[in-house]
Image (tube, rainbow over all chains, first blue to last red; front, side, top):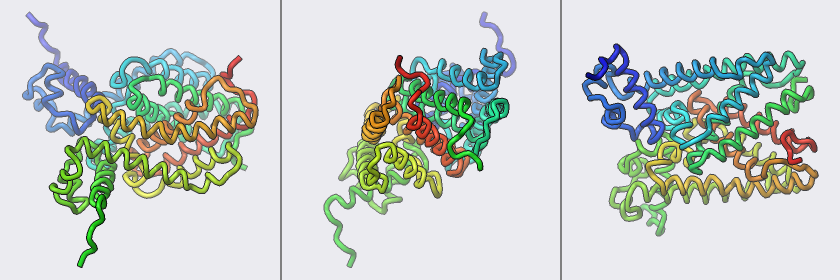
Length: 209
Length: 209
């Protein structure tokens, strides 16, 4: 006999399936049928948990955000005591994930917001929130690293943290275009060199007077 | 009497309309009807020029690539005689375009390849070609700048040129998520600082031994 499903287990099955399908073909092209097929669930199950495809997308963005936050919170680089090393460790960790097919390592949020930013305001807002969340955490380490090293900048730690997310999102697009993670890996290497320059340079170009 | 249309003029009208609609709502969500409505042309006109929506997307990618190449070839930064200044001038020029609504300054190619990379191989290939084309031109200036300054690196000029494209593509995603160009502008500022570090540093982290 198959194991009886736990409450909420089917919901998670739907969300995991949705994330896989949307990463592979985008939000607009994904149908509820696609998701049900990928998750091995009925449409009845889908609509038991979600009123619409858009409602499901909002839940998928939250599910993705929670997974990512948990993963980063427990990643090895968090054990570094030096804040600059934690920031560089985060970049190295993100680089280590760039393997396999683009649909396996690219971002649900960047994919959805790319198409839906104007047509689905609730999806845009959810993607913004979950893109900014890990950046805000990283910004604390960037701020600590700058302070510890006495580096004064004309830009905010938040802006550098968001820049790391921009590089990753753009690297995903180049990887999709190239059908390979290699171009993304090289872009993240450039980002890491920039961070090393920043942390090693008391004199920053464009710094506050 | 309305001026008689030149041969090919209606084709360009369709492509310009398609670019505007796809930038605003993505490729999959765009219908032939949307494009005809935006361009003020009939479906008969659309299908006179294009066999399908996908065929039109390939032509739109080529049209976009040709427009961008012509724009960059005639941009003011090309008059700089120092190759490093041309590279920085290119970044400043790209930054100057980050104004208005995200649909007005974001990239047709990044938008299409984000969703269609796996489902539409011909669109993916066209986007890759037109993303790599301006990067290859920029790589020549990066190479000249490094050579002129005697800077030896462990990475290729091509990889740095592609990194600039990754930053721009990712900055577009953050701008879409934030409904504002500001976050994109700040990301491009970080990219410019990286390039300044590179061109000002004979000792590069991670350089070839």
